[in-house]
Length: 385
Image 1 (cartoon, rainbow, N blue to C red):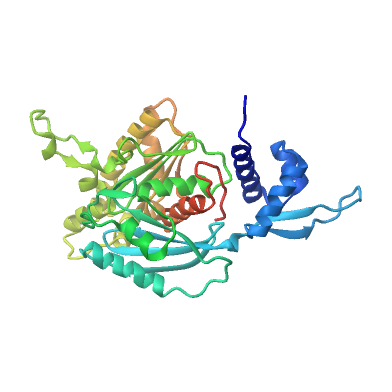
Image 2: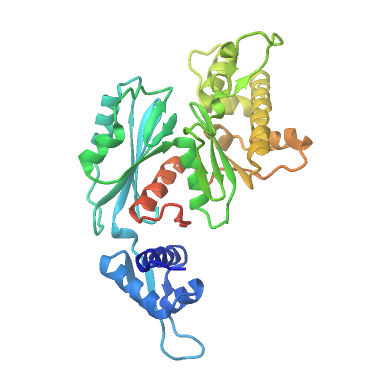
């Protein structure tokens, strides 16, 4: 079998960089043992990384009990550059800047309300222009954009909140900033976050995102699964059959988004309480004082969410199901309710809250952006949280 030397070199470089990111600070000898590579090869690759400032030398490690020369430690240079990550919902555009290990450098938001995509892009550029100078080696390296909607090959197919029409948002930002642009569905990025910002070996997970809409990010065999046209996990479009008239057109039946997203839930609560305005804080307070109407409403919510969750478990058989939801974050007993409702299933994986409800989507975008910069797509990297 003929092995191309250039291909082998690229493979070895990726493996060495992965070892340094995930296990560093680490010595050359430890990398060699971990990967089964020749010490000279490892030393040469790390030397090239140091020249490129991807890796830094931290000097000698602490002495060992056996004495002898102490090994030099290599660490990933998180200040090699930074990435900018956006999330665009119906109400707000968020920006999070991270360095190359996922640590946050800056966060800001700007409200949007039924604005054109051109106005949204102007808001995004305004947030970038307000950023301070960051002490990094190479400046901006990539931009990620999280979309509440279906994304296929860096194009927005559908979105219920912003009409992207034929506007090429990826092309626009690439031309403007001359860096790689990554665009993905927000629930998908939540799933990426749960995997990449964890030291657990998570090969098959589902992340259920409940905000203005409802979606599920799916990781299968450690890789993000988006389906044939980017529609995998669009559980908000799941039809809720409440009518016994089976001849009723499916298009006339309610979707999970329309009935049980957080926005829809708050609207139901507002009607029940006959309140002009009704927010999440009021819902939580009414639940905690055992308001009968709100208790009943949330019981219905738990029923339908358990129904959707059972379908996800049956379809993907995940190790864990994460929930990214401000409501459930405030009322974690909802997960216990769902777990009880799923007691009829023979095997139910752990149902757990997201490690970071507020920043999960943005950090998932950061992970994809950093992978792109390092040319490490499909490679397991563990980031800091």
